[in-house]
Length: 306
Image (tube, rainbow, N blue to C red; front, side, top):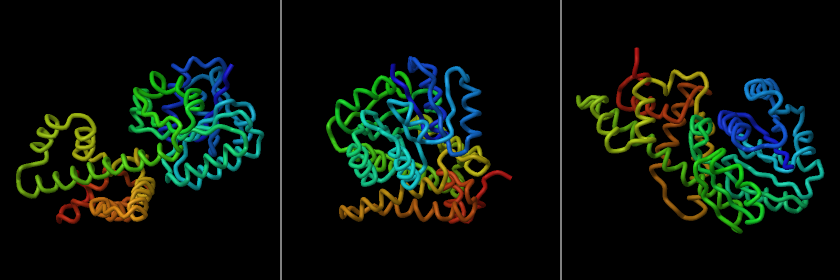
């Protein structure tokens, strides 16, 4: 009987836990820990208190579990969680980090955790919170093949629709792909923002541009375009890709570019616009809020709706 625990219940984590409970063929309740306990209690009530177990500390979660999933917002939070986890005897356990952190952080965690006799898998995921809820994420797994095989029963068909595996490769290769992959998303949002601003200023109209986007780029491009035109980029109280986290990811990519001698000027433009989003919306800023910053530079209002 394999006991699972989950640490960190943000937008992504809640959806992933939902699918673990509903489709993971668990033989015991999923252990839940979140720094704000009310969030754990709320999710447990939603998923079923007979299918979940809320604990008071990371140490309590680790003590009872064989596989521990971590999904937190930044490197500092992940490091703190792992330090707390390693206060317990973790020999023979598997720790899986689903967070988006710097690859150097992931590689350091792998050394730290395996030195304590535990196994470690880096497993960031690609997809929005709605995809996490639907179980259609793409999971990127890196680490020892034997450790990855213990995690895969909970990925494709449960939390995700597909896996990308880096078997017997450094765990940091998973977050390296994640950080580079996120630059594609950031640049996509920048391109959409600039295109819509140009369409509005030239008289083509944003709806006409959107019709073309729907036909040429169904999927993420169309989804983000819809959010922009609906004003969702500034109306949300709880952003889907919070601006501080977006800047963290962009910062990791720019750091990798600098250390490897790679030039990423487009990403520098993205970061400058995210700074303006922070100034205008604060914590409510979202990745597609870049549209508002581009609009301002084009002598339009940040908000596209009255």
